[in-house]
Amino acid sequence: MMKKLNRLVLGATILVTLTGCGSGKKNQTVESTQSSATVNITLKEDHKEIDSKEVSVKDEAVLYDVLKDNYDIEDTKGFITSIDGHKQDEKENKYWMYTINGKQAEKGVQETNVSDGDNIEFDLSKLD
Image (cartoon, rainbow, N blue to C red; front, side, top):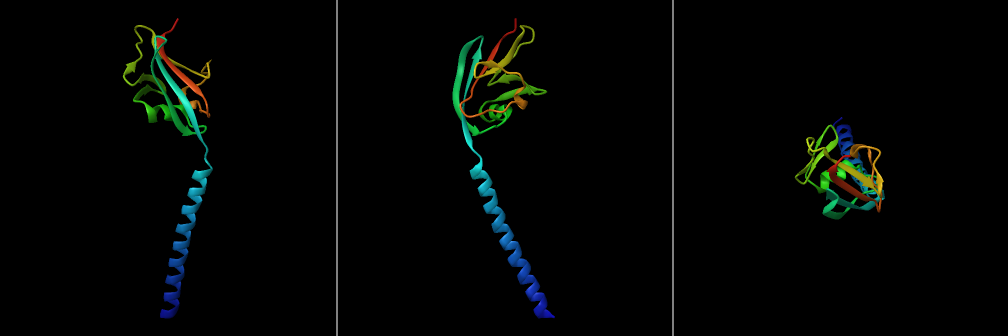
């Protein structure tokens, strides 16, 4: 009986060890298949450049996460209200707006994915 118990414990230990090793390799494979992308982000205030940087991200990353990883941002219900201390001003009708590759964004930053080579421009300016 003791022999059966030892074999059972040994078998369970080997199974756990092999399972642990196998899952580590699987995660490495998944990570290596995810492609990376480079995007350019430009910040402007009243149409004048205040910052510009090229950042590496995972392809199809969510723009909100890219901003959060590279800038000090504040938001209200998903709308960007401040980037690196440059805050919108409702009284002066100044808000953060953004374009991707020269086209006005049609979605909020939490619903927008970025792709390799995208040029993203945020402008804190008065709405007409």
